[in-house]
Amino acid sequence: MELQINDQAVQADVDAGMPLLWVLRDVLNMTGTKFGCGVAACGACTVRVDGQAVRSCVVPVSAVQGKRIQTIEALGTLEKPHALQLAWIAEQVPQCGYCQSGMLMAAAALLEKTPRPTDADIDEAMTNICRCGTYQRVRLAIKRAAGTTRKTKA
Ligand code: FES
Ligand code: FES
Image (cartoon, rainbow, N blue to C red; front, side):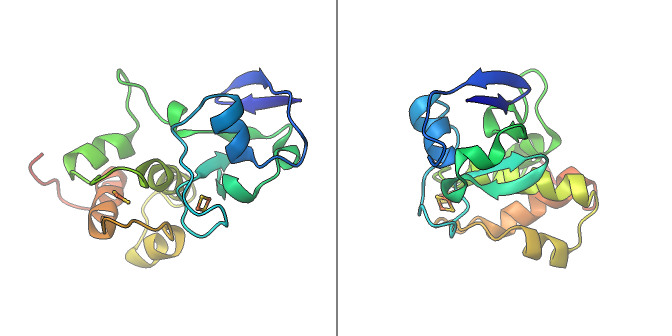
């Protein structure tokens, strides 16, 4: 089947019921998106589908055919990082890093819908689990990217 991933048409010879995460990682070798729980609980596998944050471990690939899929590989580039990636670096968010691509994709979906999120907006959108406990820095980085906090020294 043909998929639209990161603004490119991609062919994948897969079963219609295969979860999108498996297609990304195991078939297309796009390993930036992580496997954590496999049951939509942790958010490590978050990608965006038509702009919305989606937990790709429980989405059959057939459900996203014809939709715009964005993965962490296309959130920004070294030359042109996304505002969230710059904020993530400035706030030194990642610890082990495993959950962070999912966090970033969920945050990107949040900021597109709500450019200046309140704490409550962030709490509602950011339900991803981080075993390293980066939650406070995630919140700071989202606010930094949104321009709703004073800048701290990088
Ligand atoms: S791996 Fe998908 S939510 Fe945990
Ligand atoms: S940074 Fe380690 S799990 Fe989140």
